[in-house]
Image (tube, rainbow, N blue to C red):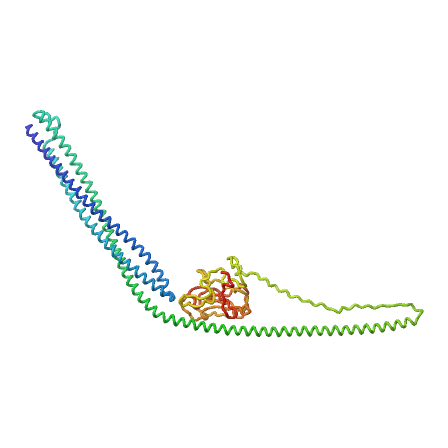
Length: 531
């Protein structure tokens, strides 16, 4: 009976050894499959880098598109910037085309990445499933091993020694028990390692599935962006055609408007020429009357002096006659006194003091000192220093957007007869008289107080404006106001408010057009104003 029990133990130990050997051979196959997975992940990393580079290029192109979109919007309705608008649209077309091509590339790369991820997921699913099966199989085999141990019985080393037929038999049995114990430990370690690999592969599989979902969503986003860019490209092509058609149509409008502008200017200048002649005639008549009045006053003064001279001469003669008569009386009295020797000699002297001169003095004192007005104080407070008789016409706003002379700005092309004073906050600022004088013309009816690239036909292009005559043929002109608060023939002081800045007439935006004219010849205001 003891021999049968020993035989059973030997058989159980041999079975355990075979089970452990099969488990170890399965673990080696897992290592080989892991090497294949690493090679696949390298390809994924390279594709990701390509996508990153292409995406960076797309972002740069999108940023450029935004800049061009802004430029197109700014020049869209500006007739003077049609060529610039057309060039911006053409550049945008090229940029969008590059964006579409880059999106096509990144969509293809993303598709490749998705395919690689799907292949990797499929492979990992197989690996995970194999590991799962191997774990199940290993656990089953371990159960068989436990079953074999149970059949053999739980024998101790003392049982082996007692049941051995000899010393050699005892050593063999002890070695077998020892080896079976080691194989049992290795089998458990192998199963635990297999379980850890299974869980790691399953986690990596889930991560790749999550990444696949993100990539698929990203692919849909890129496809939508690709579709949007293609629509934008089509729209740009259409806008380019429309812009070309509009340019051809607006060319005729522009030329007609330019002709109207020139005609308005001619009529306006003709009116001012007539006004100048009228002013010169009035001033000549005033001078003639002043000269006549001066001559009349001179004649009156001369007559008065002659009258006074005659009166003085008459008074002198009367005094001489009176003196003669008094002398005769004195002589008679002397003769009578000499005839009477007993009489005491007496003499009497009458003296009279007559003032024969009158002092007439008249002094006319005129205080010519100028007390700075509030507006002039504003100029001084802003550091403005006058270089002539004129002060700055828009206190607090000293930027000149267009100077005197020739300029080329679409419908504003031509000689600019003054300066345009402009800044972002100038609308409704005070316009003041550059010097004292008489307001000789006011136009205050233009209702087109907004920026425009055409001549609305009001005030010869000046919109609401006024002109001041400073004398000696010197005029100043103030144009594009939103309101003029002085009236014709009104005398204004230097720095007095004339109106407020607007954008009436032929004006692309709020500003004041200021001119200096001498005998109807437009002068460069830079010779009279500091800027």
